[in-house]
Image 1: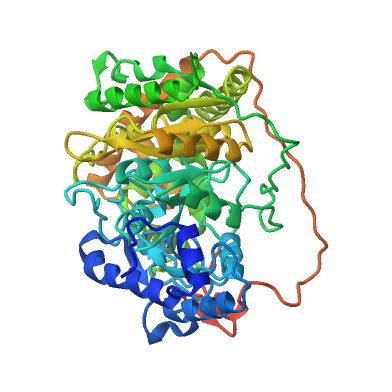
Image 2 (image 1 turned 45 degrees about the vertical axis):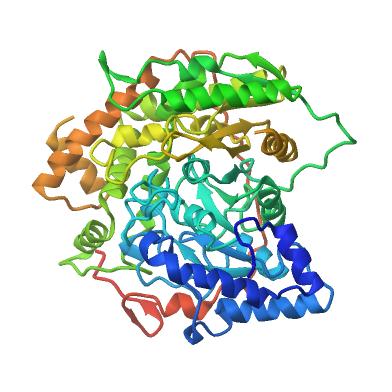
Length: 490
Length: 91
């Protein structure tokens, strides 16, 4: 019996190279778990298992991986079962971005990250559930049902990459790919007790990832341990001619002593419960147990020799507000391609305009429509300067203030989310309360800097807690080092 | 914001809404705008909007063996004729 609970990519790779078990054995073990657990958890929308899948059947993929391993040419991801989010294209297979409007869509090409992982012989287990078009923080807005948190099935796994998080947390895959536009991997990592990395913007190609916000999106890996997330990141990163915003990670010049200074913007957590007018908003502010646990984590880092410094990030407290102007603007543009003309759902109408409207009204869920309309508003004449341009200025100010602070500190540390997982159904009638889940995630997405969420403990209900480290652009290696250190000492 | 603003935005976005949906959206948008409005009060007078705009060119040549599947694209046209996409008249 393969011990999936404590498995890592290195352990699996070594076992397969030594012949202790094969990729087929490993994949079969994950398939058993999927059979037992997926119906209730709904992590996977589709599992590549069965003769219908031909050579895409995960067991066929595993067989091919076993051949590579036998020939001695195995790479790190060879034979490793990986799940991926429903908005990442794999040629010949369905991709629906959790939406009805793409229900039967078949991807005509591989995402760059898929291409790279195929070259290593990774085993794609299937596509995972997500909030529709990646809009959400709880995986409750998918057109294909909710996903449940395996730590407690009455609770959400977070979102929008909830399915990928649950696939890993419930041992239905060893690692998984999600996407982040604002926290959509780090937040479910936090809620499910996993490691989640949002790379430097541009480090990973967005080609083949259904776009939400082009200036923000990044494909981001989940794993149980930092070392696994590191391996997946290294496998998928790199400049891709199909994504002109992608670039190769710059080479590290010489051996630099790993920085040991951590800056904490305490003032951001002590902001009063975010208000609407003078009315304190229900649901805002930092959960008490999260704060207590965070302080304990800080003490552990201090004992391990890190210098802890108070820092001020005055513009960063507007991150979420800036995000909820910039992102809907980009969304309203990106989702205009779903018009029933070339692919996906088409609802017939009396004329062309009617066809567009009917298709989009039937095909898009409430949150998608909300954000499209909000985006149209902030871009419209009379509001463009007040909202959109201003939000960009705030965004640049946030990026600059983080650059400045990184002259004094090597990392910025915050809790990953203000609260642990919440119950299914909560926050659904209050959009802003839901958006606030990502209040600490937003600065990294806006500034394009890398950030990693690491499990830090659990609360009194047994729900996972998490902290996140942020570093300057391209310093993923530093993030991996400090996060691994924290894994040792927590 | 008023219902007629929602209607105008829905028209621009080519989305059809029921009266109930319009009211729901009005309420939601008021709430969201109430939150993001704090942006308008931030002092950013010294900040320039920074975009790096540069063109990335390629030769105007057809790739003889592209990564994408021509057949998969064509086979998914919701309505087609002779390999062309078919829609209601535009003009």
